[in-house]
Image (cartoon, rainbow, N blue to C red; front, top):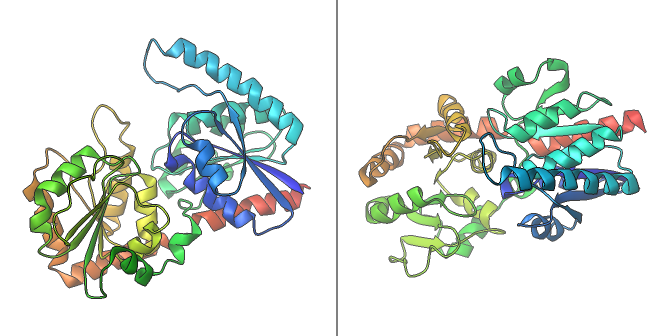
Length: 364
C-alpha cells in the first residue's frame, strides 16, 4: 500500500477538514493513511475515532509575542521535529498533507529535510503562522498550497504553487438527512429551527446573548443551542429552547434541518453551513486575542450575500433584531440560502484529495 502522512491538530478546526480529505482518499484501497499529531489534547481521540493510525509527537506553541513559555515550547518543537523525522524515515510516505496548527510545523519541517513533498491547506481568509511557515516547505518536491478563498493567494506567491479548493467539509454534511435531525430533536416538519454554534467549546458571548434573548427568539424558532461542555445544565426553558453541551454525529442532520445558523465564523462553522446551504448570522471572534481571521471570514460570506455579521458591543436586542430581519423576510432568507449554497458547491475535500491523487499517480 502507498503510505500518505497527514498532520495537524490542536483544535477540531485543524483535524476535521483533514479527516474529510482522508475520507475521500480512503476510497482508494491502495493508500495507507497515518496521522502525526500532538501527544496531548484531542488529536489522538479524533483521529483514531475516524479509523486512522496515529503517531504522537511533542509539540510547542508558536507565538508572535514574548512569553516565559517560549523557551520550553521551543525545545518541544525541536523534539517534535526529531520525533516526526524518525516516524517519517520508518514509514516512508510519498507526501505529507498538513491541515495546520502549531503541531504541524515539526512534521512538515522533518518531511522537507527528508525530501518528502509537503502539501498544506489554509482554511481562513488570511493564513495563520503555522501555514506561513509550512508554505516554505512546499517549495521542494512539487508540493502545493491549498486555500479556501481566492484572495488568499496573495500571501503565497508564486500563484503556480496555489490552488483554490474551498474548505474541506466532512462528506456527512453533503449527504445529511434533515428528517433524521428533526427526529433527534423531537421536532416536527413545521418547526423552524435556529441552530446556535459557538464551536466545540462553546462561546461565552454567544451563550450569554442567546440565553438572554431566548424568549424573543422563540417567537420565530425552536432554538437548538450547542453551548459547550458544562454550560447547558439546568438551562432548559420549555420546548422552544433546546441546549446541548456538544453535538457530534447528529450535527450534519440538524444543520440540514435548520433554517438559520447563528455562530462564530471559524472556518468549520461557515463552510459546513454553506455545504448545507443555510443562511447565517455571524458574531466573529474579535479583539486583541485574535489575529482577525474570523472577522475576515465573516465579511467574505456577508459580501457574498450568505450572512449577516454583528460586531461591536452587542446587546440581546441587537441579536433579536438581526434574527427578526431574516426570519420575517422570506425572500431575503431564500436569497441568503441560495448564496450560501453557491459557496458550498466548492467541495474542498474532493478537490484536495483529487490533487493529491493526481500527484501520486504522476510521481510513483
